[in-house]
Length: 449
Ligand code: S3P
Image (cartoon, rainbow, N blue to C red):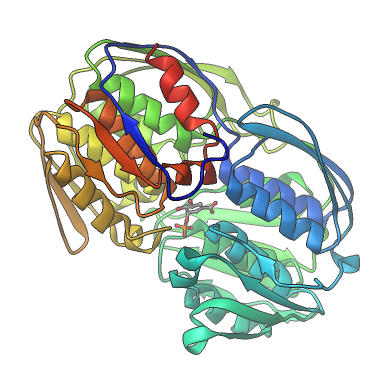
């Protein structure tokens, strides 16, 4: 599957049983950040177990175009180790060509924050999906900091042409949407600004950037307030020190196997080395609230990775699930897992309501439209109304042809549905899975054997 063409269709047949151990790609969010912080640091950084999907490869390509020597060392089908040698932020080079972020919103938004603080000209672009995604949310704070940016549609859509400045203004930015990408973009720009750059978010989002900057010597501070909102401050100008990083397995990839085993009548799976960061583990806790039998065996603490990301092995078995209400604060901690959670809710007894899903319309595809259409085609009772998805559970699914809209998370969600649906499930553009989980379909075949 690794080199499957984009337009491929995969047929998934029901599985009699699910058994075995799963290997995950390295966490995508952490892998992007490890590469980009290695780019900003002067010296050598080793990254062990990075995800080897197309998104992280795009970031590695951008890091080398900006002047780092990025070498692929060891790896397997899903992960790769990198050695990054960089001259550091002050000596990065103006990229000779367009920086192609491909399908990766994280690459685009984080690199925009870096380019804003470089006295250089750079153009950021990506694929058709990326060119549809909202970029005004990063243009506004970066313009306020003093970067010059021009983009399509009044600088709200890619491509962006950015002329940065080594002397940005520190700002206070209240993010209009819960987004770790926006937060990280502004904090990375804040490294090149003089003074205190502040990001406020109404709902806390994944905190990898803050952990990783802190571990690399950057003065950064976070306060979580009584109402659940968060304030992040970085004090610039600040240097990033090189640091080796071991990347935990991607909990967003683990989510597919957690749901597969929980909804399958004869399943027992062991998922090794899963990152269980409190700002990312929402799917584990939501599935448990639905009644999923998930055993968590912690295998590491702060000492395991440079940034202190917690890691656990997870054992998940066939479960009897019931519907739940999910509120917006829970959605922020499981934003990429909502599609696979919808599949679990389809099979669970009773009704589920997921509120605050607006941001899902702005991912690699409109995931609200995609999940509603795909699961309905498989026989689910699911509807979306504004910011809410409602699912009447207890449905037996039957195979059908479903469109993934070239979106990795939808492709993998429908493939997992195929394990329990009656008959054949035909997943369109299944190769999209390679964006975050190379080898996903090989794992799918292995655990059903
Ligand atoms: C990510 C943040 C989330 C998430 C994406 C990865 C990150 O996006 O959906 O897959 O690495 O910061 P938003 O910050 O836009 O919500």
